[in-house]
Amino acid sequence: MLILAIDTSAVASAALVSDDAMERVVESFATEDTRSHAEVLAPGIEKLLDDAGVRGADIDLIVTGVGPGPFTGLRSGIATARTLAFAWNKPLFGLMSLDAIALEVAESTEAQAEFLVATDARRKEVYWARYTLSEGKLPQLEDGPHVGFASELPDLPVFGAGAGIYADVVNANKEFSTTQPDAASLGKFAMALLIAGVELPDSTPLYLRESDAQVPGPRKRAL
Image 1: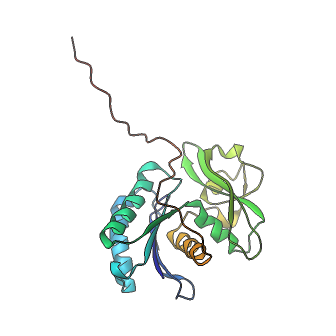
Image 2 (image 1 turned 135 degrees about the vertical axis):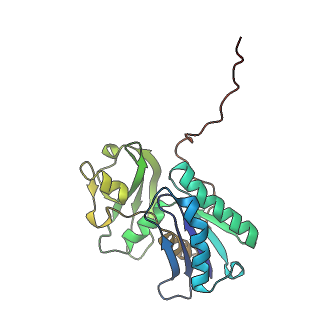
């Protein structure tokens, strides 16, 4: 099985994940910029496929991160995933983007039985979710996602770039203080769920805020 995973909830990233590869991830790319998704995503995916010698027809399914994340950036990834799924006639699924960081935590020596994942929501807030972890099992979402002030988070270890920004008010894990959701980890999480027989959700985005861009109302005529 070959999965194309895409996530733009923070940085722009994409990855090819296979159940035939030893480390699962065949090829991947991720930017550092959190504001140039539309410009870099399509060329990045094209190069990703070329480098791996893969065509759209070779993809079995597409997985996209559905957030939470800023409206415009998140929409870029989901729209791209939906377009490719339509063009290639492939199944499309979505996973919460914070799951990608939760999986990295589970695979690290920093694993905790209960922990939070947090990313930057701007406006001095974070997106966050609470997970539990049992030995030999995938992270289990217990609560979230939410958006709010870092000072209001539960008193648990916090992983992710959101924790790094507000390390003065949360129990931030230093090893993960800059970690953003990444398509490679998201694809690995999706693969693990599919192997376990779990049905993946659809690509409905998790917009926890309204878009800042609003359709203007009718203009009043001058008298």
